[in-house]
Length: 365
Image (tube, rainbow, N blue to C red; front, side, top):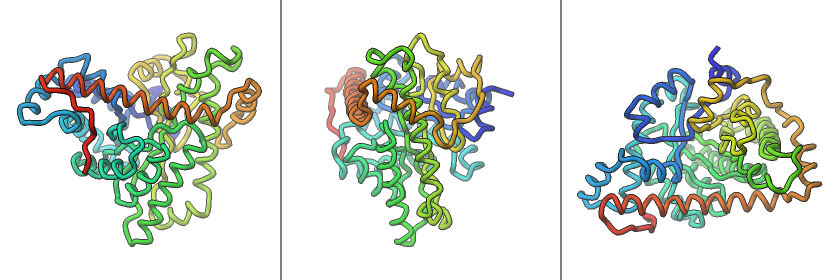
């Protein structure tokens, strides 16, 4: 059996953590769907910044849109959505066959909105309308300002990919926002079927502590955090509160593993993909990890629903003076700032290629 197909049979979806116009034009994405069981993809400002800066694939579109008077964020959003609409159409058969459970693509809000709840709500609704595809998630970070924006967007019927989650506690805040949004829809007599995923970032934990923990704990923190969060995810799906919503027709907010490319050159390139093989989850992986797993990956067992040895491992990190709560907040803040940096850089590249001055302010409703 195809090794990536093994994960599909286990109940996990594989999504590509990448999009470029090149992989759409040359058939690479189509091949990933056919050969590697890829059933969705995600994007973010860093992915688009690299694609726009390092290729000429977008140059003509940038010039054409600039000639129509577009610039800054307005130009970028339409540039990105042009790619994501094409990808969404490739995944539409999967979306239809799975009744909307799978086959999704994702578009990030401007990271400049990270502390702006009202602005995030308005921008999410605008992107959802502009995308004009039923299988496109809008990505909102699970930050303090993002949580109420997630609830309101779900209530409004906007499918949301909650991004930049780093801990069980941050995941629970996102799950609560989703539940509240669905409960409000039911109370208002609306359809409770609004899709959402919650994206937990994994490998950044290990990169953050690599210089401060003993060798026997290297590359174990991210997987332990994932195990703890997976246990909470399974427990939440067993609660009377969720069962009541499910009986009314609601869909689970699926747990998604993000940042699963191995950053330690001494570790296996398939380390996280193999450890995070868990039913009813999604794993987003970069091209390099996908190819490595297709060549020599192995799935020996599924992640235990109780998180396995996550708690004993986390106790060892506590003994090593790693403050999990403080580090989770730092990783979330650092992740948001990294997206701001990429956002400003990509807008500068677009301005350079269009001959227009750069504009970094986000669009408001």
